[in-house]
Image (cartoon, rainbow, N blue to C red):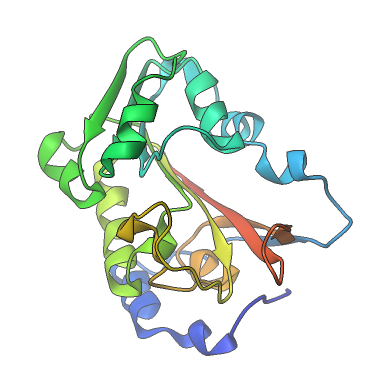
Length: 223
């Protein structure tokens, strides 16, 4: 198993505590795609990845947490999926204004002016099947991010999907948006220890210097 990032995070007390709260799940597999072993399109592909994990997406409801302006390759795929219901959650108003102008293939699409932490008061537990955290976890402190994952596992019916940088990737605010600051760093092992299946794409973010590795982490279940 290849570990990418700073190994001091492997013994994170917060991850150990979360494993206890989850009943000590079996570690999920980690697959590493080395530099040169994939294309950008492979690494950014979402729809087939979700279909393999959860089946027909047209029958599912989805919480897209921290949806942003809907401009990235992954964000456009989320909007193009014919969900039964899609709730796009975003707290930064300039992004919200752009998101509201975008077309979505979902039968029902809601755009919420809401911080991610507040969705638990806006919806009922079990109202959504999936929660997507696309480039989101790194914007929370480690403690708050792990707490969020634990709450989501009790809140949604079918699973949680994470896409995030791996290792230490520093970032200050962007677009005059303080929420864009990176407040935590993650390893593939962190998500694996919580029972997620992890796919790592080395140096995926080639626009950064040095290029930053990224990973998908998916955990599915049925209730």
